[in-house]
Image (cartoon, helix red, strand yellow):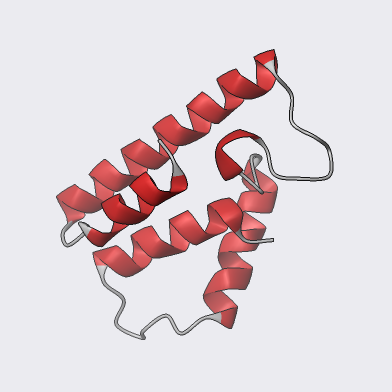
Length: 93
């Protein structure tokens, strides 16, 4: 799944169920990235396959926290807000 596909999917999030579906798509995207990386490793100076700037949990969570702190996440966040935060953590440096 490409980033545009994930960006389209994130726009469809409007409930717990659609959020969980988005998380499944994001997990599949990460798994596909790992498969690609094993066969064709990316440069150490750029993102991993499929645009993953943060393919490990620690950096991913740090990016999630940093993006959440620096953006205008509404005080009463929606399911879509949560999905947008997860997608941003994939590519946030």
